[in-house]
Length: 402
Ligand code: ACO
Image 1: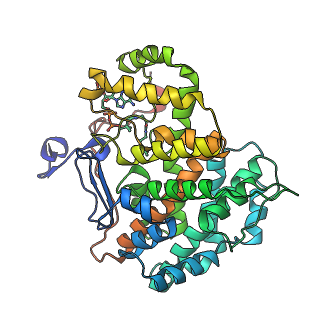
Image 2: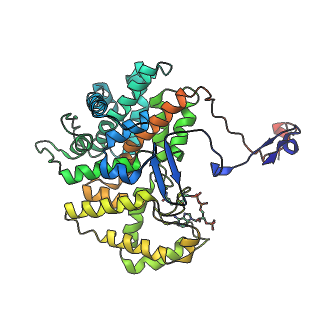
Image 3: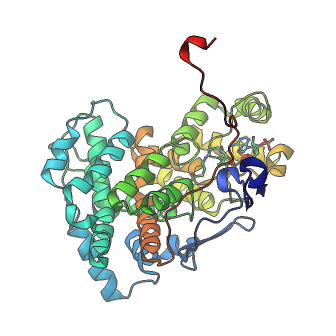
């Protein structure tokens, strides 16, 4: 707590909490985390149950509306999402302005933001009907946008959505079909992708969700807010960690080099960190990492990939668990640790890993945005700062400056 009287000569107190490690910025009924026990609940339902029994669109419905859908509600929701998967043809031309070798996340930040120019009606946030339409549009079009970003950066033609496929299969087909060769979706991979999307769908006030809320608090339209979320997610301390974790595993290369990297991670003079390790809230094993490890095993079996980096990852996890530095600091694998290996086995290049994360997290972002906009007590987000610069001083004429 800072006494602002000392700083500004006025009475009053405020809290200084860099990184918001103990400040709640909002009330929310969407996602609950018990970081000490490794518990994650979406609207009260354990992540393990949703991954075992549900599907991604059911999870989207749950996050958005607060309850699991009935058969009828699920059918209607799936139908609405399925009928909004196309993007405006001009959007496709918009992509042509990006350099061919752009990172897919760079293309996504731009194309998601540009949606507000194409779907003008959905920018009327005062109208609940338009807010729902914006949510459906975001969830429905995000796989198309992400797949188009991938196709564009690989120099291949776009593949249009095929709406008799389920959500995950449609996405895989849009990414991996090439001219004259329709991608045959393996049901094991499609189910794995669906579960990966569920795992990434929300995680309460992570940096990107807080960014979406902060952007939305000014009344900005939902597409602009989600674009802000995509930009934030890209960083290696957040969603970019999956790409960074795979790079790190490749650099380690073989189990006998693990001690060297553990020593670097512990060295206070070395900025190196174990990527895919540690979390601000999960101070025991991230429950999503356990589920992702199982999905990874299944995908490696289904694709007959003999991935030696999976063995390196398992060994690294065990070696860290035997090391006091990591146990005392409560550093365990997080969701990103095994997701890169899994996505790579499915055929995605590292640059697409965070794009897949963004596609999934759109469900949480739009649910968080909707909850915030509907809250009558909502105010514009305006953090304070602890000013550490000069006190008032006199202007010095340029000729007299040294
Ligand atoms: N490897 C080595 N040491 C670490 C790691 C790591 N991955 N993470 C934290 N530490 C150490 C820090 O050096 C610090 O040590 P100190 O107390 O001696 O200074 C201590 O643990 C606490 O670290 P903070 O950075 O203060 O923890 P914070 O909660 O701010 O950071 C974060 C959480 C950003 C996730 C961090 O653990 C990290 O950088 N991890 C690697 C990146 C990563 O995997 N990000 C993905 C996050 S999950 C997600 O987005 C799905």
